[in-house]
Length: 304
Image (cartoon, rainbow, N blue to C red; front, side):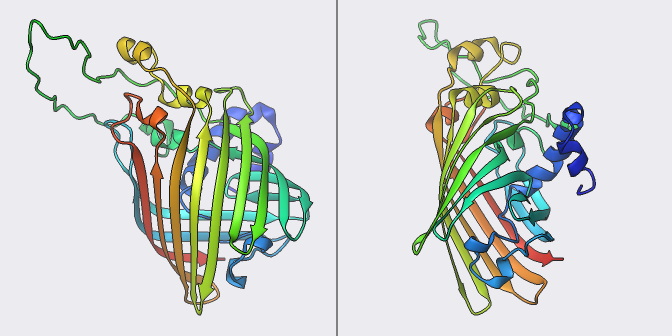
C-alpha cells in the first residue's frame, strides 16, 4: 500500500483507482486509533511517533463491528494495520493527509483530508462483495378492510452504489490538563455528495506502569447532503420510501475506550471498545434497523 499512495494521491487522473485502494486500507484503519500518536498527544513514549520516519504497526486478534443496516451482516475484525508519517509540517496518519499551519504548546491547527465512515456499513472490502444475503422472514400482519395504515414492508431492490470520497478541511487540537479537544470541519472534495461533516472529540489518556488507557467522547455532525447520499432511498431501490423518508442533518454521539499493556518495545496487548449512538435523523431511514453501532477488538499489536 505504501508504494501506491504517493503516486495515486498526486495524480487526479488515477482518481478511480485511488478510491478503490484507499477504501480497502481505510476501512480497516478506521476501526482503532493509531498505534503512534503526535508528540503532544502522547500518554507515554511508547505512543509517540519519531519525526521524519514511517511508523508501521499491525494488530491481530478478534473483534466485530455491528452493522445497523437492515439485512447487512456485522463486520468481523481480524487484522488492523497502522501507517503514519510525521514530517516538519506534512503528515500522513491512517489514511489522512495533513499540513500543520500552526503548532504551539496549547494548540495545533492543521489542514487535513479525512473520509466518511458511513460507507463502511455498505461495503466490507470490495465493491463485488457489497450485497449480502437477505433474510426471507416476513412479519405477519392482520389485514383489515378498514385499516388506515398503508405503509408497506421495508423491502428493497438492490441498493445503488454509495461511492467513496475524500473530505478536506481544517482541524484544531486544544491541549489541556483535562484532556485533548479536537474540533474539525470537512467538505466533500470530489463532488460525490457535496456534503460536509464536523466533529467535536474529547480524549483523555493516562498510563500506569505498563498499562496505557485512553477514553474519548465523540460528537459527529453530518449535513443533510451526507445523510441523504448514504441513507436516503433512491426511487430504484423503493419508490414508496424514496418519497416518505426525507433526510436531515444530525449528530452521532459516541464513546471510545482503548487499553494497552506493554509487553516489549514492539509488542502490546490491546483491548478497544467503541459505541456509537446514531442520530435520530439517520436512524429514521428505512435502510436501518437499529440506532447504534458497537465495535470491539481484543488482540496483540506489533509496532515495527
